[in-house]
Image (cartoon, rainbow, N blue to C red; front, top):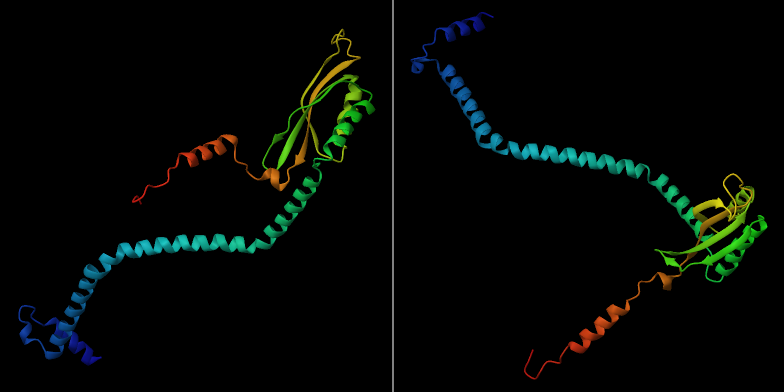
Amino acid sequence: MNQLKALFEQLRNLDPNDPGRWPLGVRIGTAVLLFLVAAAGGYYFLVWKSKRPLLLEARASEGQLLESLTTKAKRAANLDAYRVQLAEMEKSFGAMLRQLPNKTEVPNLLVDISQTGLAAGLEEKLFQPQGEVKKDFYAELPISIRLTGGYHEMGRFASGIAALPRIVTLHDIEITPASGKTAMDPAELTFNVTAKTYRYLDEEEQAPTESKDEKGKAKKDRKGKKKPAAGEA
């Protein structure tokens, strides 16, 4: 304790203007301290300060990578659930496809739609299939229908259409009093509706085909090409 007290007393009596008279140990310690301070300052200004933007960029990149990793980890954890959901969707899609008639079944389906109206007690005034409208993997066949009868018979017709084994939808429904009737005497009504059924397209029908204009243009281009003359590249 006395030695430490004597050392503090000696340091207190040092003349800062005359370091040459300091004890050897004090001079060495001071030199080492100054060297450490200079080294720390040089490292800060020459290394740390110049590399700080790179460090900040690396930290930001690290945060993005961690966020991406968390998102992918959540997806991986739900992968089995997604697979089950995909299998259920494929199963439902397959069941819906089986409800679409093929080419040979469409005529019978049209008969079933017509018979549904007659079975409901309606009188058929118009039953006119329109041209097919091709979509991505199926074709849409609209049918213009006009029926006359009572309101309850029309309800039975709609229920009968919904009960068909194939997909048939009703659009543009219009119910008006029959000719010679008034809105106050709706015993007989006219039922105008567009029924749509759908047909699954086979692979050949789904494959893109070259249009006539494109074929003609290709032939014209081939005819317009000249054989290179001798000596031409």
